[in-house]
Structures are given as C-alpha cells and as structure tokens.
Image (tube, rainbow, N blue to C red):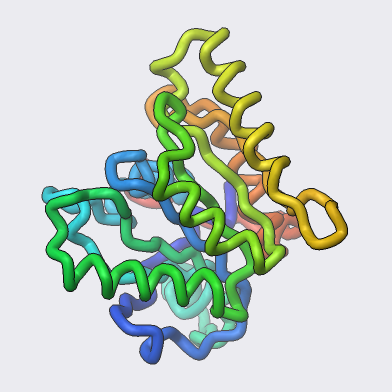
Length: 232
C-alpha cells in the first residue's frame, strides 16, 4: 500500500501569510480546471472525496493541504503520535482557466498561485496536470514560466489518456517531453522536468505517478504501509 493512502485534510489557506509553518517537503498539484486534478489526487490517495471538485469549475480559490503521516495515523492505529510527525504534504492549488471568475478574484488567485510556486521554500516539486488532448495551454505555459526559475522538479500528468488512440498517446507524450526539454538553466542544462500518460478511469500510469510523487517527497525509500480505507 502506498504512503499516499495516509493523506488526510490538513488545512486550507487563502493568503500567503496563512501558509503552515511546517518544514516537511511539499508537492503541489496544479492544472487547468477540468483537466482532472481532483480526480488524480483522489485516485492516487485511494480516496473518493479527499480533493474537492467544485460544481462551478474555477470557483475554488483556496490552497488545500493534505498531510502524509501525523496525528491521524496515530488515531487510526490507536497509539500516540504527534502532529509534528507529519512527513510530507500534498498541496492542491486552485484550478485555473475559467473566464467566469470575476476580475478581482482572478487577480488575487494569480498572485496567490504565482507567489506560492515561486517563493515557498518548502515546495519540493510541482505536479502539473494537463488534459492529454489539449496540453500546454497558455495558462499551463504560464505556470511553467513561473516555476521553472526555481530549478525544482516538475512532473506532468497527461490525464484522460484513455481517450486517445495508442498513436495519439505516444505523440502526446513525445510532445510533452519535447516542450519540457526546451526549459534549460543558465548553463544550458535541462531542468528536472518529466512527463507521463495518466488515466484515472483506466488506472493508467498510477504506479508510475505514485512512485514519482513519493520520490519528490523524499519518501520513496519507505515501505511502511497503512490499513485499507473505506474508500476501497
């Protein structure tokens, strides 16, 4: 069982000043509204409603945190642990890309997203969620441009790959890797950007994504398991 199955809601914030003071690694999930971000988080964590998909896409403007390890694990095992034993955090960033969002809210949203991905020291990596049929929209590129200067890893999940033919899927992955390889540092070395095909419906790429996210959280060497949840 994956350590990601331990994930539980930790906190939600709407301003940078309210970000948690935890010092554990954070991996953030970003993506265009309707790209399947909430679905991807839920299936990776083996839970149905951990990440909330708003009925009005583009309206969720908070940063939601989910903890790996911590007090909830102790409660589940009926032994004593402390909240400061949290070992990693998954961060669900607001979806972007809906014109219906009011101007003031959109500006706040852009500032919150941009400042978080550029300035958060605890942020270890970004998981960029893109619909494999429509990757690298202008807003996806904007997110890449915000984050690339940090030099931290990006892992792209090309979702809904089950809707593509085998040839289309191969081409989508090749395109993603070509685009990502074009981002280089001052010495001309490629940034640590990777990509894979993913389908929550067909469970394509689930193990690869799990392995990569745990690696980005520096938890890939841990084989600890947790009991099944009622979301199985």
